[in-house]
Image (cartoon, rainbow, N blue to C red):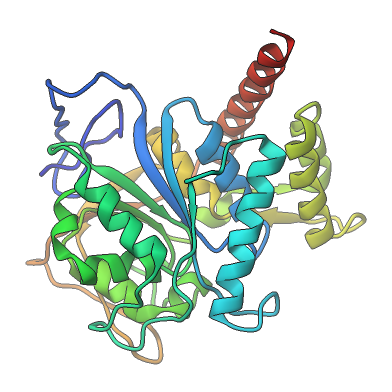
Length: 326
């Protein structure tokens, strides 16, 4: 299995090279099949990523999984997952996007070792969905929170690594001295499982990559003007989080993961041996040149990412308006 530079059409983009593999017998659906695994209520960036996954014309969103989180916005991982589940439904409602049979609850706890999965509706659905894929096609699993659901699915059924590719936003670049980052810190064992599983991985680091995808209240007001109820909601939650009168920008971290599927050129990357994640006090990387390859993003072209997001959103809003008139 080879890693392609672009997830175009029915391309299978693993992490081991640059070749595109297509199934000539498959129906010619030009969209990339994907699921989104998201701790949506954790902050205010997952909502943007969810909207993008749902409305991007080149993507085929098969499912959305609620991921656990624990911070000041939840009482613990189970509560965080449930609040994320409710937020997913809220966002899809504002987007007027059908949610029946699309949204699934995930893990209610984090993993306690790299050998013990946390069973959940989301993990079981991912396994079923993966087995519905016809090789050499792959299902893209875009994870933008603690990666518990995905790691648990890989432990419950390791064979799915031949049918999925994981795009994960979490941790820092392989040259960074530590991984003190929310998504990875929440469940380092889950991250360790994914990196060690040999499933094709596209790693979206936060430091020096996702952190560049930021905006401000005045800019967001202009970008979301005329985008209906969903635009109003995205602006509302962003403004409430940042503050109306605070002169600052705020990262929309998770938009980077979906943006890579839409336009890989906006997030330059390279292939290299997968680093070893150590569950120590630094959550450090060590490097072994004999390890399987993965793709790591190196930079983010911030303007291009937002331009594509807004363009897709405006197209979706216009299409919805035209359909309503008909």
